[in-house]
Length: 229
Image (cartoon, rainbow, N blue to C red; front, side, top):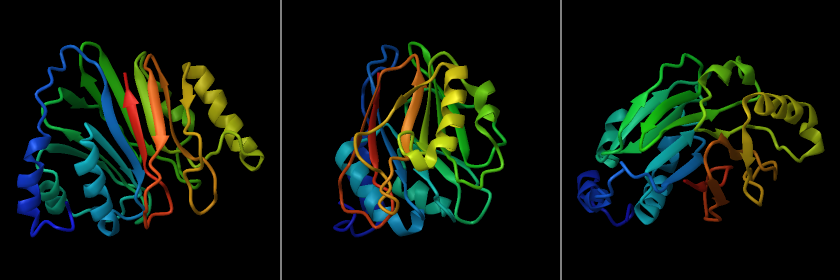
């Protein structure tokens, strides 16, 4: 694993077995990690261990802060990296997609938003995002990106069931209704700091299962494992 690997090149050799032979012309499911890392440089070990164990097809990492792309390329040689900067030094989102998956990035100028299409038996749009409370955009700005088979995933900074978040939740739910999106929320809090459930997915045209990985972490968010089918 990460801690026992002598170098990034050694780790890359160990991870060569992650190359799957599945044909994606017949789409069955995709397994994803969604994790607000609160600084990727500080959580490399955690991300690598989770990836080594679960062999994710996709990784969505929020609040990555400063990014060392040479380190990403060395640690994830079998993945393509899409990055979108945030609005301050603490933001930024990265999507890592396993090589061999037929994808194309969709242009988006909004900070903390990465959009790409997966060209499977039917095209699936993935919108990876981090939505800080101080974001300069609103939910309606994402409407033009929504398709009939689409998932928006990340840190929404809104607990849909917390009375303290009622105004923010109502705004989010109104937008979801306008785009015919359903919420897929894990059954326990995802924020260790606020004890709220603020990391989840909203989607249409897809079956989404989502659960919290109750693993030790130095981030203030728990990672999520998600399956799209």
